[in-house]
Image 1 (cartoon, rainbow over the protein chains, first blue to last red):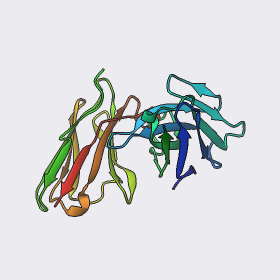
Image 2: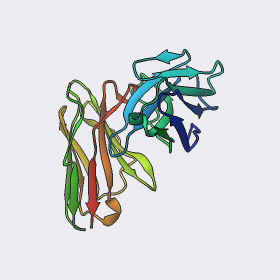
Image 3: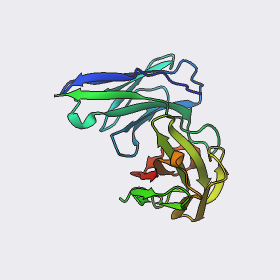
Image 4: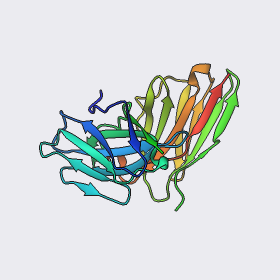
Length: 113
Length: 114
């Protein structure tokens, strides 16, 4: 069962910030939000994950709303190489049992020159 | 650091033939996952190993599919006999800590059964 809802596609101008939304209104207290992306013909690539605090790494920032029912992945300066399908996943972390990574259909981001 | 290594990258085979896909997880990782990706069904988990033991194989489509992990650094996914509907990209992934932690994917094995 899909636990997340994402828009099927988005465009972003090169050099601009790409803001990818994700709704996860049924998220449980012990579930983390993960983001992966898949560039054509490659394996999915881990981007970032978080529980309730905003997170930032060298690739992106993750903003999670206070009620944790939605989040936004931010690519601060999108490049053509960021064109990919972005997957938002919620799952229990740091546990050897429990739900799998369910990838859903993701958002196809196209960065436009 | 070497990531998850899969072979072959591409394989074309005839219906009825045996197909063996291979995976070397990231050194030190104790969990390994096999996924299949198609346009129709997206990315599906087939089987999950923890410490070389199959934990969840509920995603394995049928008896024609089998997976083994004889040691911590090697796994195989075998299809026998193969059918055209098995055509897909098969990804192997590994993690430290089972389902819990971040999983890292290989580049995939593109299988075409004609």
